Image (cartoon, rainbow, N blue to C red; front, side, top):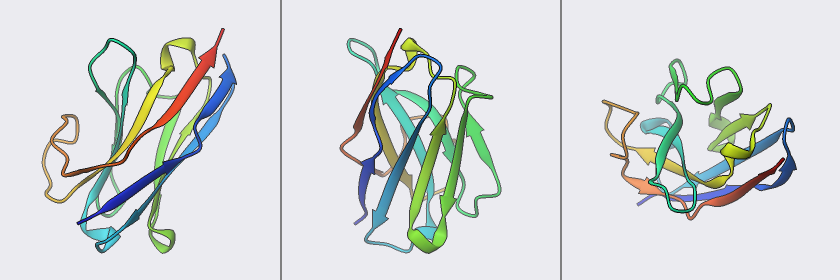
Length: 123
């Protein structure tokens, strides 16, 4: 079992930055890939970014490419999402997820999920 706890959400003005963190416990951190997803009111949950087990490969949705950066800190069992140049359309609940197996990181096929953290971007 893996427990994931997100932090770092909040209210920010358009053009600002936020850094989300996800602390993982319960299994060896290096054995699973990590991802960030988001869900806005009335919309389906969507992929934002992911990083593989080693941290050597990262994946981004087109809507955030060039603005968001995902990284992992093995010593802290943490995955981070640095969000810059935020837009009102980035407003959503952001979820951290862990993937035991490899494969496609762009889908919702992750094994463990956090409870989410709210990000609100005002115009």
